[in-house]
Image (cartoon, rainbow, N blue to C red; front, side):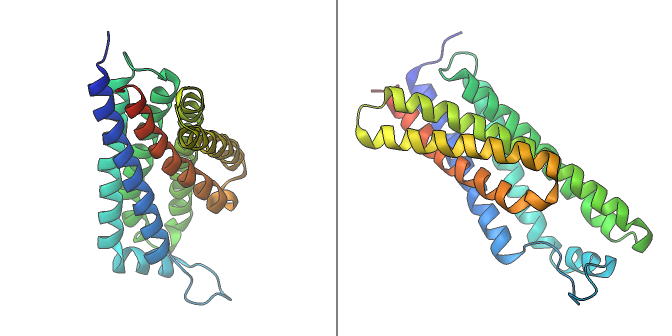
Length: 221
């Protein structure tokens, strides 16, 4: 099965836009929502804090997560469409995995976080268990994003005609390797690695989007 260069260019552009949208939503989430916070830092996080967050901020949280779900579905479908006949099959396969696993973690958040948070103090342990499970899928998805960024970055380094393209490819390769390694470590270490794992994964996603656009243009020229 073959895929035309024009078709590949369109798919690459659509997936790149979807990736960039996930970077924007993650930045917005961390800047304006950021998750539950303890009312009294000396006491620490309580079930009341968690319940208040998901009661007061649920509309904003659900909106961002729904936008991300659409973006990740677009990434998965686009990658699966390009995979059979496109070049960089490792990169497309990794992107498809990232899209699917991100859909799983967002689905857990949208369907389970609020009802368990509101179930009462006796179920707080269950809330944190589901949070941990969701973030395990999050870390796995970031590993896949890192692999995709490394694959497309390496390809761009080899095939780009100008210095800018090769530099972009090199940055995507480095960011991808860093994201994959850090998120593998986070998968074992847990939530303590969340910020660095998320940060490296988000940077890799941004540079992957740039590399994808360049990849599509390379194969239409």
